[in-house]
Image 1: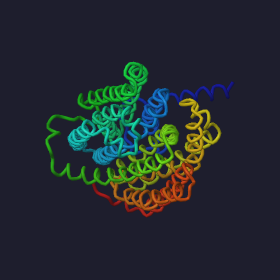
Image 2: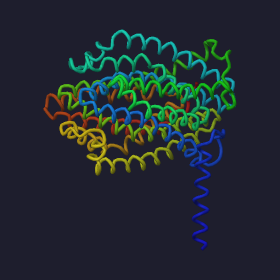
Image 3: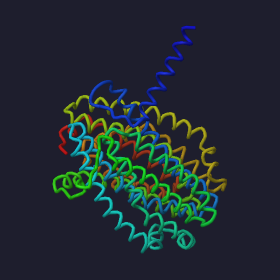
Image 4: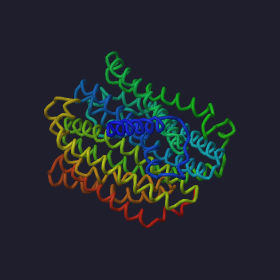
Length: 465
């Protein structure tokens, strides 16, 4: 009887904790239990990234029914869109770092101004990318090594995705602002709303418009999510209350923002461009290899993004606690987040090793594509524990405003090490696609070890933003 009562009480306590984490209630993360703070932030952030993961899987699930040419088109376009995601992540990192630091300092007005200045930057960048997507979609696919079939059947998809890039940029940026303020629940809800719309629209629009319909659905879903974000951000009921005057360019704020954003964007561009190079290497093995690589990458991202959500909690905690002059608390938060992320990724690794065929079979049944995707999942999953710890370290640097350190780490390991090695192993030594997958594991493991060493040195504690 007592045992049953205790169990019910524990379940109630857990339920109430999750309910609190998913509410839009503001929390002070500069005091109290660190474990509690990590999970209050992590729960909505993980669910937020789960929804971003679903975007990738939903699209490739329906597009996969159109054949390997359509799947390969999505893969090549996503490789180019990685540049857009890099810009989105970079500016978002800067916004999170500045907003979190100002919130930790109890300067909410300055936090709102930092967010508004970031929005101005995003709009300008989006216009330039849109023009490129509208004018050169075929050239972009050819540059990526796309065959004539891919170019002719897929350029509309590429055109729509690139011309509508502003919804990607704003979705990530505005969520970065909310995360910096410690209100991860709104960021989560915007992704849920966007995803529900995408799940409904994707099969419908693909039915009527084919492959371009997938791009229409994704862009529309994200646009609805952005509208939800802006509504909450501009109505001014939380810590961040953006007003019209905050959009007036402020030289000092813009300088701080661009200082962090430029290196953070370069950091992600280096990583993303390396994925583009790896995709380019895969084109030497034909459309089936590219399609298999694309499907595997979608599943990899599906599980990595929730882990990235947990690592985002470390970024917010580092930023706010540095703002409150509590460096030891900031450091302890990172190690706790790294521990939890490693456990999660270990579980995912076991899933991929045991059920790779099942996961790939959900997307496609083409034998040649399945064989490549299964091998990719099993090999890449061997390094998942390292990925989990590494992304926490990287986000800790970013949350402190030290985006320079991860940039140099990425530059060395991706461009000086990974790409030449992948070409050597896959092409010169004739290991084929398997060589590419092995290089991914080795590189990510080296990045994690390097990041841990640099984090322990503690120079990130001295960064001013």
